[in-house]
Amino acid sequence: MHRGFRVWVSALLLGLLPLIAGAHKPSDSYLGLDWQGDRMTGRWDIALSDLEAAIGLDTDGDGRITWGEVRSHHADIAAYALSRLQISADGQPCSNQAGEQQVDDHSDGAYTVLSFSASCPAGARSLELRYRLFADVDPLHRGLLRLSDDRGTRTAVLDPNGPPQRFERSASGSAGTIWQFLREGVWHIWIGFDHILFLLSLLLPAVLVWLPPRWLPAPRLRDALVDVAKIVTAFTLAHSITLTLATLGLIALPSRLVESAIAASVMLAALNNLFPLFQGRRWLMAFGFGLIHGFGFATVLSELQLPQDALLLALLAFNGGVELGQLAIVAVFLPLAFGLRASRFYRRVVLQGGSWVIAGLAAVWFVERAFSLKLLAV
Image 1 (cartoon, helix red, strand yellow):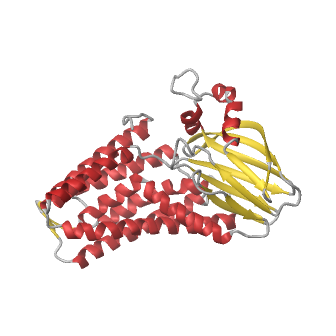
Image 2 (spheres, rainbow, N blue to C red; image 1 turned 45 degrees about the vertical axis):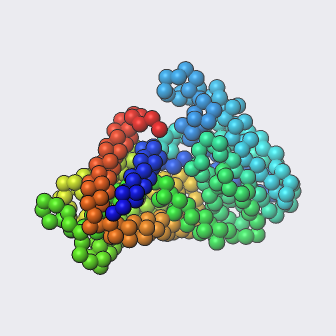
């Protein structure tokens, strides 16, 4: 193997470490709009932790955001949020008016609940939303929209750095919902570094065979493909089960427990590559821990409070996107890994070195999530 290629791969891994080290639940806000006639009412749930990063809520700097601090910043919160949401009807701007604010607990922490109203031109048939919340501080942020009118409920994913989104009163929006949540599922798995590292930890040995006391290259591509197919199928089946149950509200687990368990699963999967216990049965590990990862995926949809028909459509599309995102990772990983499997670089640097790095990062995530600490400043 050329030394230049090894250096390039190592530099790529080191470059990704700051992003991976900061793995957390993607930032979301939940925007509900009820459009009736020329009036619109809205409820906007925004994470206090995101607002703290954007405008500062912790007045006394003690690391905690109290209700008093939130209340004292109501005007700041409303001004900041509503200035980043432009609503137009038939090309004419709607005027937004902030209402009362409350605080509500979501699966990942406390959110401010901003109520507001918008006055739009009478008889309007189309609506355009320009969403810019946190566009300047968090490029990964998304707004999850629930839009209700006299024809039903539609959903959409709002990208602060994307173009305005347009909605017609006469359209059902089903095709748009499918495409947007399909894309969001792909995006969610690609920025979910803990999910990616769990999957990669299981895939790294797929092109090798464990013959104590060492790993040896798998003789045939077919053997690696069968192993990968078992792992991906088991992981897909498991997280699809819990994603569905959690999204439909049949099972609910505390966010801290779920996120801590996901970090533990990544650590154990990586350690299994260094001290093999589940060789030939990694699909069992993929299934067991995949049940936990499904709860992590579910937070995207479970907070939207959609009616059953809209929820099922969004759920199917989102889950399909997650699967496509996984398959894309496998499609890139497997040919490279199989081509490198016989090299000392792959077995020493990629498998062993990579597994140690993954296990170390996951251990830090576990402590941070389980005990609400911040150990990595990234």
